[in-house]
Picture 1: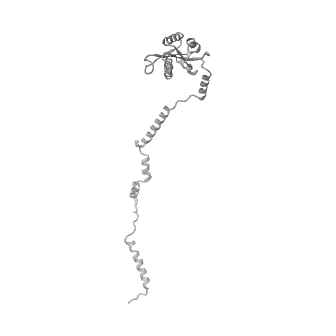
Picture 2 (picture 1 turned 90 degrees about the horizontal axis):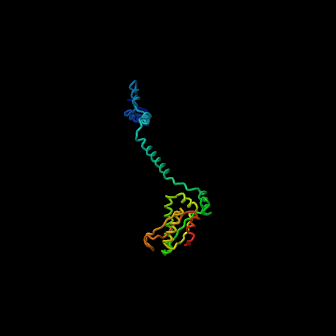
Picture 3 (picture 1 turned 120 degrees about the vertical axis):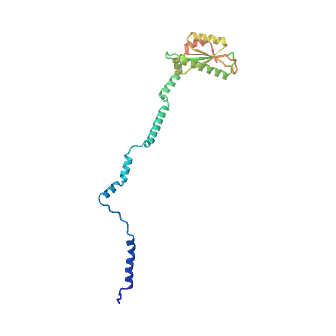
Length: 231
């Protein structure tokens, strides 16, 4: 009979070494297969690479959907530029020009020949119109004359505007005197306009309320209206 002289703790360490190596023997770690020859090269060539995939998508045929956002943005920018150019405000006259116009008007209403241009508004006294009615009828006469000169003698109108648009309000006795004044002014080539009232207030419909004479040269208008009184 043979007796073992090893101590108990030495035997236990030998058993532990063998037991810890059992799982590694039963379940070995997987290793990559080793390929040999032409079959290995073919499999490696067939495997797609990330770089090649991205290059194929980027270098492929262009898709129409990729250009739609750029086309839409370009169209909107062009439309905004067209609208901004079409709605551009008109430039106001230079301050120097406006100052010179007002300076000329303040010196007096003189025509190109050095003579004053003015308009006379003749009001009938026999109608007994109130102050507000007279004011509105004089406004009708001035605007009516302005509208006629816009089509018949725009040059005279512009000259009168640039020189201050002088207006004087006079009175006449009745319709007969107003008619004589109109005939005399037209005979001298001075434009005239008569207001016929609508008859809504104070006077009958069709009443001739105010006669506008001019604009014209001061000397010519004074020759027609020198005997009339101021309102």
